[in-house]
Length: 305
Image (cartoon, rainbow, N blue to C red; front, side, top):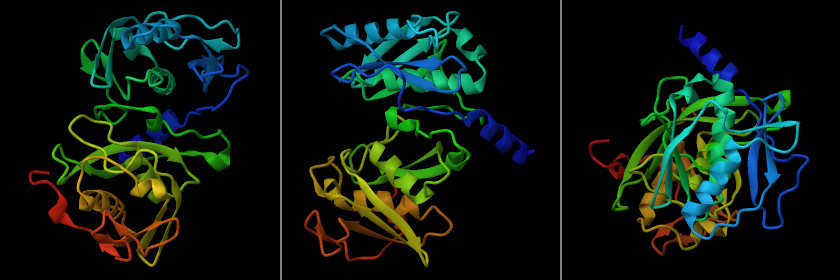
């Protein structure tokens, strides 16, 4: 039964998120995402948003998502039967509450609609995360788990070929607690390209930040992953200099073990070495030598986790 549920989940969520369409983005890059005619992908279309304040810009984007696109090859994002009951914007977290008809969409369509909404709305400078509710209740995924806050990195693009088939996995990621001195575990279902190593997906998800309230980012958002490889149980994480830049208000050990504890959740990883531009002779935050081969540290996890 469990294998059948996994198969159905993969079949439902193996959808294509395209990165380009016939319509080019506006000069400032502002777009609205619509569904393609076959409802198999989302397509960015150039748009003009003129509002000054964040609430006005949110309302302008929502109006476009509710409207039919000009091209006959595209479909409106939010189905006509679905109504936006309300929205709230608080500390860069935008919560959208839809009518019960939202749940009438099949799962594959709902994932596309959700991706289009999130990718469109995060273009508002004052919006970093999106939460979706239906009649006041958070939406759930195919496993029955609540879908938390999302951003543009929640949906990983693939081009739809067999070589780029989508995989679904459950990850245990470690983010900072509120005071930035301990780690908290966030379990989440992640969709990713089958050709990408899951170790790299984990690091990219950590950089993207948490998708639920009460968890806090540990790695500077502009950090780039140069490569991630695992050999003989040691995972080598090579990051660019963005990793050593001004990040969040967390302890250096919290950042290090956010990476280490997340990666050592994988059965084939027992140790982690972190490199910056391929170098290890670096002292991270002045007191942590990256020449160290790090192992899992359960003492960094906040009690009660």
